[in-house]
Amino acid sequence: MENNCVLIGLDTSISSTGVSIYLNGELASYFSLNQTNKKLTSDEKFNEMSNLIFDVLCSYRPDIVVCELTSMTRNAVTQRNLTLLLGVVKGWCIFNDVSCHFFRASEWRSLVKDKDEKLPRKRVELKEWSKNKTRLLFNIEPENDDIS
Image (cartoon, rainbow, N blue to C red; front, side, top):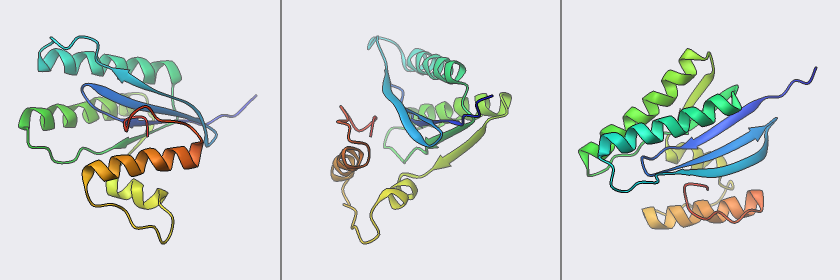
């Protein structure tokens, strides 16, 4: 019997959620879950993305799920929906007895960066740093920062 460990990494968003699938510590797959109908209400977009994430979790049946925590936004509705989306993931993990871990962006960046590497300060520069680090570590060309 083969003993595999499946880890799913999520960068959740209402419009585009980045997904990475690791099998025994090796990147096996990555993709984005994208909102298809821009005319939906905020609640409808939330429901659609929740269902897309559920589909991924149910399909891959991970042993571990890792998510980036939300950072403060200026829009209260967006902040609420992003936080609730993390609750959807946490709820799925609890229901399915799956280990779930949340990291602040600054936490995972410090784990990934080189020992003496200085991180940029501005959000736009951090997103570009993330894409560059993905190229370096995984030899892939991320189409957007959700993937990286």
